[in-house]
Length: 206
Image 1 (spheres, rainbow, N blue to C red):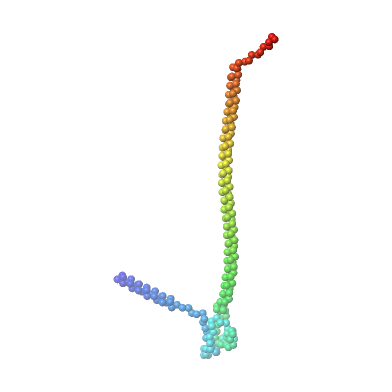
Image 2 (spheres, rainbow, N blue to C red):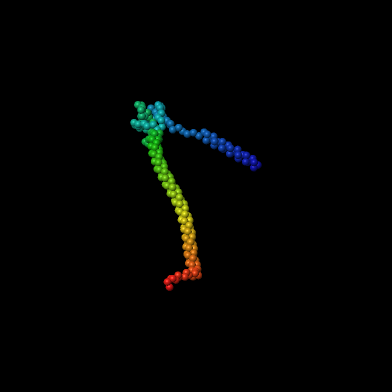
């Protein structure tokens, strides 16, 4: 029973979807090129003598009842049209070229603004790239100076160590030299008293 209800519901949904699809496929739009019938006189009893296109400008010559006698641009004949089919405002069809010109002008202006901003952005990016390059160069120079400073400190430390060693060697030599001199003096002081003294020669006249 439940399966049967499910099947019926599915068929109903498919039918509804098919109907909606058919309605969508049959959808159309009314053309903008509408026409209005015009007559030879100011009432429905007069015969239809032609049509006027929607949005077409006309000159109103007179009004009688529900109709107005008009003259289309470029035409010598006059016809009668329902006054309700006329309007004071310019039609969208007539304004379309003007609107298109305005759109083209605004588009051109926007393109100019866009190009100007792109140029400014490009200049700014170039300036930023130059600054980044300068910063990289300064950082590289700073790193090189630090390395040279470390090398100089190491060289100074080694030279200081060598000076300390040389100073110690020099002091050691001074001590050894002084000790040698003192030892030699002591030795001379000990040896000299024990040396035999030379006797003085007596003068043979005495």
